[in-house]
Image (cartoon, rainbow, N blue to C red; front, top):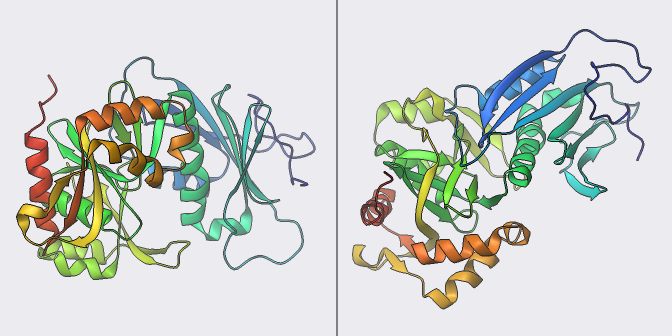
Length: 347
């Protein structure tokens, strides 16, 4: 594949493909997922996407050192040809210590975990798709670097909690994880993350990015508070690759909604579409012999990472449950509250 500019992970100032200096880059730092990320770009539009993702979030710190990462963001002109109506999905490639995520010849990312560096290249026309750039390139690069360098297990799921303790919400797309997370926030819980959770396997400390909640329109029928309905209903609407449209509600508009520090996991809960016969049947323990296979089947990507076996051993001992659907999401939150009550609080 021919790239429009050379791939470089060096400390040199930004330059064009012919080595000529361009206007100075702007640098900004944000503490994310236990590390400090330095973002460098001469594009205000790209730095605004970084700020949309990570501005105003609490700085989470994990046991051990807090490494520094460097991410360079560049804008290039697209080669002549048709511009797609929607960007193609990122395709992963790797070799010789590098990880590459390629959308097309003008939009890609290159990561070097050993150097704690990444280069993200975006074409000018791609700036018209800020959600795709932010979510599929910028956040993706941050997640990959943090998980590889800090030895974190990357999980597709949500996490809510209180008093330093959290519960991991797993399950298939559409099972109701985001609806539960929203209800938890409305009932005074803290959100650690709604889509991607990163767990330190030795301690079961979980971290994430509590920037947005993605809520489908039909979820609003469970929201009684007028202010909360206005907060969600007035949010930007994004469209997932699956075609599902969701409100992207910014949690930073609601103070104290984001977990101020990593949460120690009290266990994992598989959110199910199955209706519960009554409230006593909402939360059921998963037999220990089924727990590991369920986790592996639900988290195929994470199961291939270092630390997976340690994570499974510890989270299984903490407890795995299935949460069935009640008449209202608040029924599920009450069941999770009881689970959190049984866990010793940190300190």
